[in-house]
Amino acid sequence: MRCMLCESWSFTHICKRCRTQYLTPSLYTKKILGDIPVYSFYKYSDIETLLHTKHTDLGYYIYSILAQQSMKHFAKTFEYSYDVAAIGIDDHVRHGYSHTAILAKALRSKVITPHYGKLRARSHDTYSSQSFQYRLMHPRRFESKPFTENDVILVDDILTTGRTLSEAAETLHREGKKVLFCLTLADADKYS
Figure 1: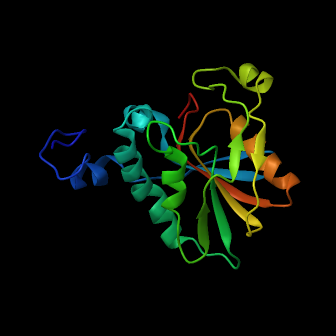
Figure 2: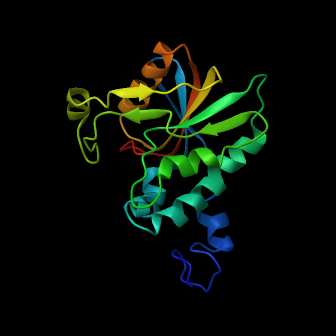
């Protein structure tokens, strides 16, 4: 097959050279709810076309590569005194896979345990291309299912307004959980 980025022959959808050249992550930081850090690995504009594959069968492969480049590398260097849960935001299976489950799975380490199906939205309104006002008027209404760890890393693919992550964190706080921080692939801030 050919690499999606440079069109050279490759055994994977994105060749090793392009992974190094274009997909080496950086950390961009914002905060939600006043004090919860959100770390994004890429600027949205740098990987926008790759992120748009999530609505296709190809998305599984692309999100797996992005997860390996960012989340897995992060997990290798993360140290903490207690066990931590990695929870993907609304990890419903769509198009044959869940993009947030792929991201959470890549975080597995000695101290991080990914959990699936633990934080699901009862509302299925789409937020894609919607304003902050729309997001406020149409909350996700998350429900949480039990898991053992008290400390949590929330995982999503794109940080837009922070509303989804904030609502998810509030849901977990009501359950007595502590959200340490959030990880996203990209920050979609228009200034990114």
